[in-house]
Length: 270
Figure: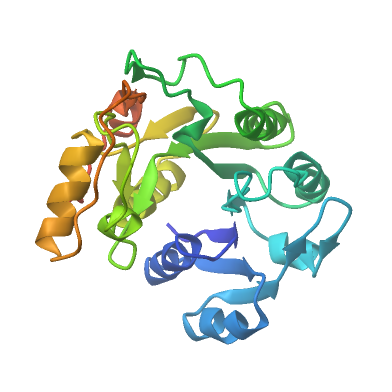
């Protein structure tokens, strides 16, 4: 089925997603914040747009980027941990005004499982579990609510676990470091290939107005996982701090697997 899709945020996940959707026969508009990347998008059959967000303005032709598209995939990482003062909510409010006046009917919003709190009880987290009261989580949840509460389009929220892939191996995150906390916390990771497949399934099956957690259904401890990964890649081993009780959570993707009839394709150790 041919679709015209807009992807705002053609970065580490958005670009290969756009490439995959084009190869599947769809027409894709894609945005980037880098002038140098425009030709990269164009070479892959993606209609490129230079779009930059600020709390007060959207630089670039956002109207043309959305024009004619029925489905929008919004993949702009808020980076609130690095820049907690950034007004992510205001930026998304600006975008919503443009979506409301566009041809967009359906939206996939890429969120994160960091909206849930890590605790010493290591709870199993579903989509109805209590969310975190942290500043960063509160901002992200507010944005989720802005989209799901808007009657002008359908929204499905995807809360991904930690993203991994061929050029983003988790072993490199912690290799050689010492004093790493929470050694007994479970990992909640998802491979880039599964992210792409899940998004495609949601669009093709028209699964709208839902919230899904998405993490591979295997959760070894951080110490077990990262130590093994570093050994396999012949990298310096990480050293973990066992002096305090670990905090963490187990992200359940049961709802996603059931409603989408989805089986995860890519183990997190590859």
